[in-house]
Length: 146
Image (cartoon, rainbow, N blue to C red; front, side, top):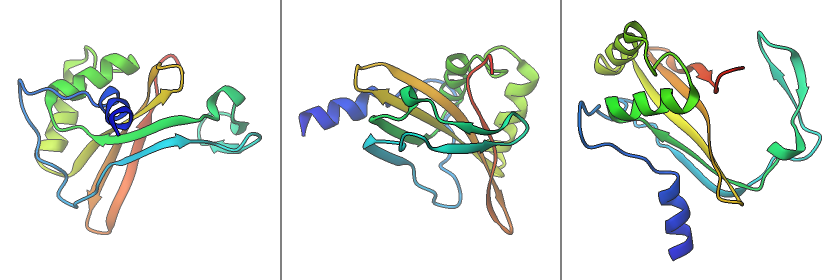
């Protein structure tokens, strides 16, 4: 149990300073799975990129996968720094993202992979739109360069 708690904590980064966000209004919960694997030879479709692509063997796992809701401004900015995206230093983008969380039309999620060798990888920042018709993943942006 202590090892599982240590693995979980390695994927958990929180900030208590600065603006705190309310949890998403839809009650969507995060996801946590140890020993997650993608079968070798799996192909995925990547829209707006290259079409079909084979998942690299180095990406097949096993890994500890965590998807957690981002509940503070500092955590959102931290995620931008880890991914090298516009949240790192673009004030307009920062304001745009924060306004959507504040008005509760969006929630943001961090996807991380903890590899067996102890390396923590920030895989993507996910934005979920909360619409009258339901919840939609609006974007899932990975690290740069892409």
